[in-house]
Image 1 (cartoon, helix red, strand yellow):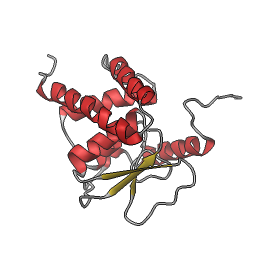
Image 2 (spheres, helix red, strand yellow; image 1 turned 180 degrees about the vertical axis):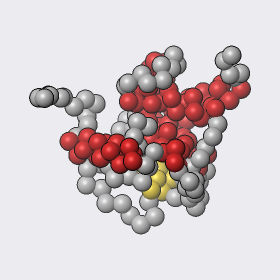
Image 3 (cartoon, one colour; image 1 turned 30 degrees about the vertical axis):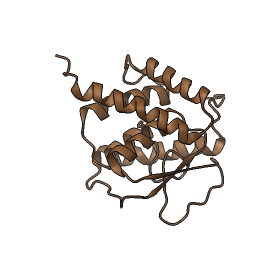
Length: 184
């Protein structure tokens, strides 16, 4: 079989290779098999790639709201970054928390920290559909969230501002799903 592919959304060969390696590793160790939830000391520095978009914005919100309320965020170049002692990387090559199997980083964090909540699960499905562009969960809300995130990204160059603006969206979305009755 001969196949040709074109990378989209600025993925580099290095990032694509990492995603494939992560997918392969995850096929033998499903995120659902995590036996002991991860825990972190408050106030860690969480590192991710510059130019945050939906998965990194949502993951930063999840980290600060449910995992490490005192988290600090650092934005670095996608290539060549050498982590400092004590830093935790998310949604980046060789990161401690990134895509695993079919899951986006947000979903990986949910599994690894054993966050079981219908509101968070719903947001994870939306983030997955927007980030992975595979419509795996067929979430009707995905198009709206994608448009809101695109608006934030288009209006703000600062990653910190993007996180702050995105946090308001995810706070409200979480409240909606948390209070919503499950469908019959």
